[in-house]
Amino acid sequence: MELILWRHAEAEEGRDDLARVLTRKGQQQAGAMAAWLRPRLPEDYRLLVSEARRARQTGAALGKHAEVLPAINPGASAADVLAALGWPRVEGTVVLVGHQPYLGRVASLLLADAEQDWSVKKGAVWWIQRRERNGDAQCVLRVMMTPGMVGAGD
Image (cartoon, rainbow, N blue to C red; front, side, top):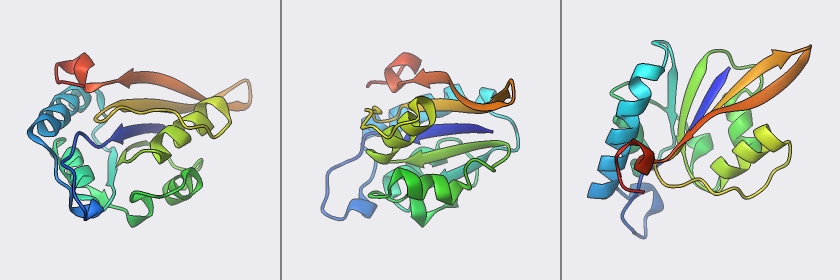
């Protein structure tokens, strides 16, 4: 399995957290990251987004139908997110557009086997591969990209 954790791009402030929209800079970040991701993704990947408008807008930059998954809304725990994915029994490639702090916690849990508050920049992608090596399951960081690394502002 390949799990791509994509934090939503920069969004406007607002009282209704689920209604917040991307700023112009956030739209540029999402577009630049999607342009980088698109040629690297297999055709049959799944795109999962939270109900938050900013997450749906970020994922929409890929130009693929997204599955809206309330279990990955802001405030979810790392355990909630992994359970919603069916981790570790999920096959294929999943792009999950979500939120801090759970994205950093999921990354740390998978990569360091301990839940920690790792920082994930707005619009950044952490591409994690789960594989078997000598009979043991491992999670490996394939790539970490920020919007600034692909030509959009961080």
